[in-house]
Length: 234
Length: 234
DNA sequence: GACGCAATTAACCGAGTGGTTCATTCTAAC
DNA sequence: GTTAGAATGAACCACTCGGTTAATTGCGTC
Picture 1 (tube, rainbow over the protein chains, first blue to last red):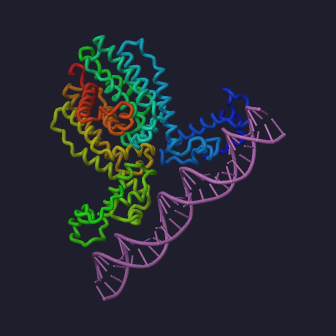
Picture 2: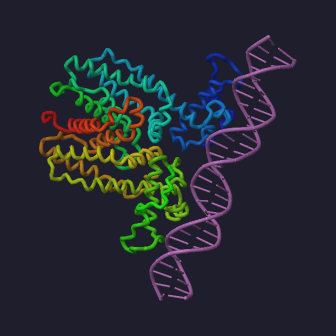
Picture 3: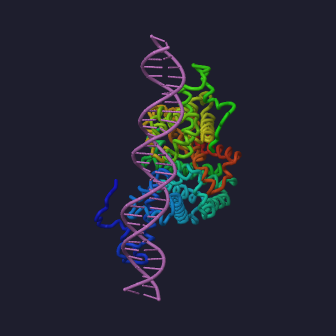
């Protein structure tokens, strides 16, 4: 578990990069890489054990750096946690923005969004765990992140555009609410990852096999569709 | 936050009970009450701050007892957490068992189950938080609770009976899966409470006003219904 | 090539934490 | 009333953990 990493051939790329700007540096004095290294280690540790459960020493062990560096760059544990949370949200927003569905008909666009969200959550369990943890803390740290409330509305905007198009096309009910749709999509996609442990302990893990997951995803698509489509268009 | 509670008139009923058997005792030597008192305090503290975030001293403060008593009765922090979790699940199962829907037609019975779950989760945020916390710990403690896997299948059985009746009546699709239905109901009911903090920070708290919650609940009912009902019976 | 500052290291620290020791008090049984 | 054992209180303790101090090294600059 400690993994001495002595004479590791590939050097894990952390100290071996620096190709961006100051390339070819010998071995030290590389703040950006160190910061990124710390951030990644911290993300893993916080996601695994929560804010209070995470140990600075454990973060250090996941790192090529020393404990001193963590406080040097991030101040204290809570600020580090905040930085991790911020970065995680930033990445998710970025991924969302790269989903191009403007050319699709509304119902197919909606399906795409559902499938994307479902898959994305599955593929980013650490992000899910960070959100779980932040909810345990009643979102107290998140409130200190600016750029959140503003940019995260993009997800709603996307759905809003789909809904408008769907209504115009006479395909969707005229009273659909993008916010509610988003709530439903998130709920099932999130729960699927977040509550896997307790759910499968209670009811078995059949639903988490690959084929069952595909089936569940399709179930979510159907659920959302039927709340959105006009009764006569189902 | 500390609340000295000195000369509290009603004595909070903790030391004032003892009517069960050894009634009228003066002031001490009341193990069952003390244990229950500790358990309640611990539940609140663990639900508020998680396993590692919870402080024994904070639990003591929520109690009429001393720290010594906690370890005397429960051994260590983790065992206390386990006892809390166990009791919480027990209560939920009990509540579920009291929901009598055998006399209702299948579609109405299903609606009742959805509404019950949605409301129950809303009304028991501490339970939700405990489950969230346990999921952060990958269900490692829960696995030590016996009586779980066995008795919790009751929830599925209930749905299974409804589904069978629905299929027989030609009302439900013949391929409905009670497990999947349960997954969907749980997902939305759980998310609604668990992720309230982050969701409302991102998208506003409109959905959590009382009327909006009623609307959401109805939305869940509709969602579930449309996945279950035969297309020609919607 | 000395200066100055950023980056880094190693050792250290005090508060807070889970948990314990030991003596005392209560209660029931004889 | 004595006694045995459960229940309780007060003080105590070892140690973990977040955070710091102070000294050292790398490196661009004049």
